[in-house]
Image (cartoon, rainbow, N blue to C red; front, side):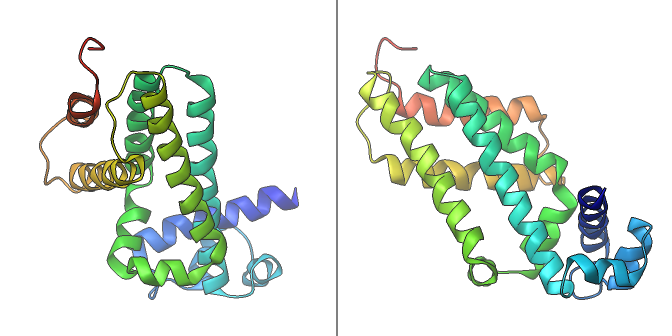
Length: 195
């Protein structure tokens, strides 16, 4: 029951931050949206910053967990890359308003300073993408390359395509975006005869 209430507060905070912005959002607005009293919010979170930090941390943990699930569920390196592209774009689409607010109001350096755990999640995510590419090279599916460079480029490209798709600057379907990203990276990385 307490966990449900905490999750309700976090969900209300996500919506409120997304629509009002971090600086304009108030604890009162979040409490109203969650259907709880203002004091109840303070039972779970010290202040608005603590609430925002918890929201970011849980969101990044969810992305990391879903990435691990994809990596464990698929052994074929090319299928893993395709499914990771799909999963990543889906997350960006589902969380668009909150993601837009975060990108608008917080620089990457500021986000890194918020919570050491958030930075740890990002390092783990990069390590997973790097592992997928290393295993693709070892299996003979992918050409030799620097997996860390490609993992970073891949995540950056997916984030940019997802952001531009969501804000209407990119006129393409989600499927077209997934296929375009997959082809971009796989065409460059795939060994001859593995097409």
